Image (cartoon, rainbow, N blue to C red; front, side, top):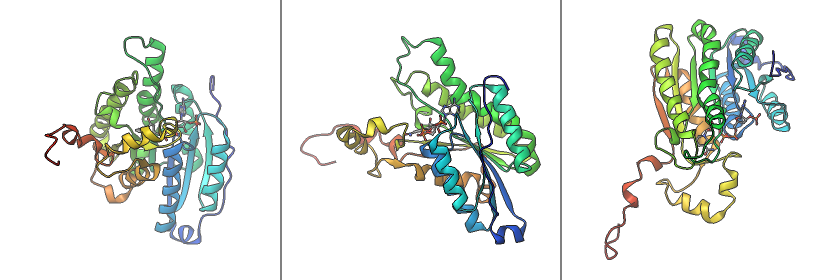
Length: 288
Ligand SMILES: NC(=O)c1ccc[n+]([C@@H]2O[C@H](COP(=O)([O-])OP(=O)(O)OC[C@H]3O[C@@H](n4cnc5c(N)ncnc54)[C@H](OP(=O)(O)O)[C@@H]3O)[C@@H](O)[C@H]2O)c1
């Protein structure tokens, strides 16, 4: 496929006896698998599959072969998951669709698609160039649509679900982040529309909107202790989120326990989005 590489550096291990005996398997595709949230999501899926006595077949998507993907693969294998690593640039629709089809053929179907890969870059709308706008939308919005289109027949067959990772920046305008806010807002709406169009096939589609989460994407911010402390002070729950906080929300939306949940956006932000009014200064002689 031009412009992208799809590799299978994965290896298989035997599923747990319980899963094999029960004949249960769960086939999942996760993009951005070796990133901060992706890794936490993959590990949460593996632990959950073990708890449920299921065999997990996980297609772990990254943009390129990295040590982080290799490490993840080993960690998942230790948790008895079958893993296939797939490297593809999600901004390339044809290559992405082919990679999804290959992953589905490998797993023999698909139960859950987790569209997690995304990226933000600083930028001012006054000066942002068109190529950067397009790149941001291609990754943060269009890639989910491409993945969903390619996965639709398999998800319909399994009455499966799609969970996309959006952002609080898709709910509030985020100055200084170029096209990111607009792209994540569009992602939330894209998923709502998919939920309506594919509901009659039994496919559930939901988004998770993380708030401030410490991952490699945001590490350069939280490295500054003063900035981290100021950010923390905005969070009603009193701390910056961890990738595992988001992973648990994704896990729920992808689970049978969420069988009647579709078209929803689960905000995982420690309360930040609703915290505007506590920021309003009051009389100095009155405690808030
Ligand atoms: N961290 C936060 O505070 C925060 C808050 C709200 C929303 N989010 C969203 O949460 C999701 C995960 O973010 P994160 O914090 O875990 O970031 P991260 O650690 O930087 O991971 C992002 C992942 O996206 C993948 N990716 C980037 N460009 C790609 C491309 N063109 N093709 C294929 N894969 C690509 C990367 O894969 P490679 O490493 O293989 O390139 C990486 O694994 C993103 O959608 C992000 O927008 C994050």
